[in-house]
Amino acid sequence: MMNALKKTACALLCVFGITQFSNAQATSSGFAIDEGNVVVTPARCFPESCESTVAALTGTFNADINGTDITFSSIDVSVTPNVGFSLPANPNTSSNGTTRQAKFELNGDTLSVKGIVDSRAFDGPLYEYSFTASVSDSFDAHDFFTATQDLRKCVSPLCGGIYVKAVNKRLTQCADGTRKPQCYIGTPNWEKLGFNPFTHAGDTGPFTPILLKGEISALDTKPYGNLGEFTATAAYRPATNNPARGKFVALMNKGIFCITSPCFSTDEFILNTDKTRVISGFDLNPTGASGKDVDAAYNEYGNERPIIAAGYNKRVQELHGVGVSFIANQFYLPISGPKTCDEGYSLVEGKCQTPHGCEAPQLELTAIGGAPMIDPITGEITSSVSYSCVDSCEFPAFESGPASCTVALP
Image 1 (cartoon, rainbow, N blue to C red):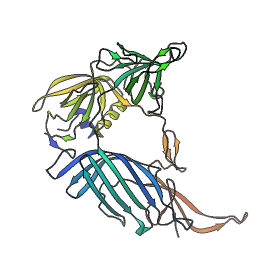
Image 2 (cartoon, helix red, strand yellow):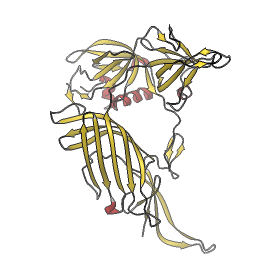
Image 3 (cartoon, helix red, strand yellow):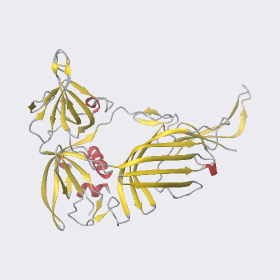
Image 4 (tube, one colour):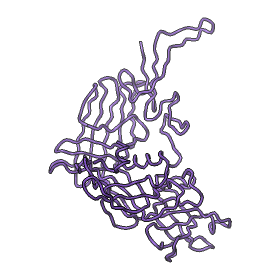
């Protein structure tokens, strides 16, 4: 599937996939959770009293609605703290002793869902979840800037800030209202990102711009005057250190599957404008980027997230007609900040793991069993203990803490 995407950037006749309307009664849309929570109540616990835990539910998903039926796909949902809950793809299907029930209401662009995942019949937990979600916007193409660090040595904030330039524009409006080829910003604000993107941009050279989404605002820095502030809301690193040429665009998967070409399955958003067009494919190979980064870009596209790239459109002869392909000379990938782990996991070589090596979101199962043994010298009583990694706590195991469950064997 990945190879097919790389070769054509669309699979081959335009048959509408699940992101399209299939009939008048059936709809499918991408949603982002506005507000949600999960209440988990264990069936077995120590000591005697069982207390419920409330966790926040966030993320995105696709919802397929047909009359009174609803299913979820492309689920990218997280729970804080991690209580072992996963949004079920089919919220009204019961299996393996687990009961799943959900009710929903779609009011315009707002979806409200309330459901349960109940495995108490086999001593598992009861999950009660509810959320409201809104239809996701396709893409906000505005407020994109290339940015480089100011490496001059002088008194801050006169030096040491950043230079920003609005992409696809000859001049950028600076904090003092003037328009220049680029603007000096004395105070970069990384609060909404939670990290400095320049320190997490990998092997990007000191003079290679990264890409930022954000806003320029006035900031009077006494006694130096208005040196401006830039508040960043998203950051992207270039795939190579080559200069970006041409127009900057965002390429989005339309969710169309084809069996011939050209297949106009990609939305092309021209950054910092309201212009869009539909194209039949794109090519990232001319960038010279590593296979790892090219794969990461196609993974973004496959998960209906944008590939941001620079380049130009080219008419290409395809199997059953002339298509339009975007030829990239640079593309950008999201910059990730310092990784943090949910309770019960520790960061080990960039991965969130339990004490005995289970990688999130897996849980660590502690099996305690066998007849107790007495050390003939010390008199210490021990029992057989083993550890394994599981996707969920199934009967007869029970949740015994964050990211862990326990089973008592005979």
